[in-house]
Length: 195
Image 1 (tube, helix red, strand yellow):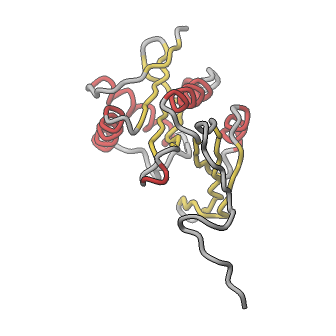
Image 2 (image 1 turned 135 degrees about the horizontal axis):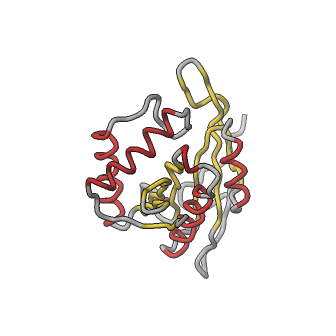
């Protein structure tokens, strides 16, 4: 079995079809990847075209895990949206086709995305995961991610509610960076209110 990580930047019909198959079948199997029902090819093609445009613009990276020449796993990072978040990125849409589970594709994709983010100069990698996705949380922890927040029952799937768990991986700061944490002072600071 031949497994490799690829970094496409241009869409084509084959890539669209293979990525759609992964997303569709993961959702059909109950995967927690952001869709209530399996999306159609048009929806995934539009999404993929947008992601690959962001990749070409330097604001994202899209990884595919290819097994014997066919895409069987995917994931991406996206740069933070506003100016104060440009130093961090968010890992999203990590999934492996149900037929490829157990091959280590999730680990391959996430580790590749972390390396890509480090090479791109990011200081922090973040991700969100559904609270009941214990296997994914364990995978992320094994790669160094730490939980930094949990919003109880904030993910809605029909009548069910699940925790929204946020995790982060620090990659390091440039020399000369001042780490102020929650120290008062500087831009955006305000005094504590007294009662």
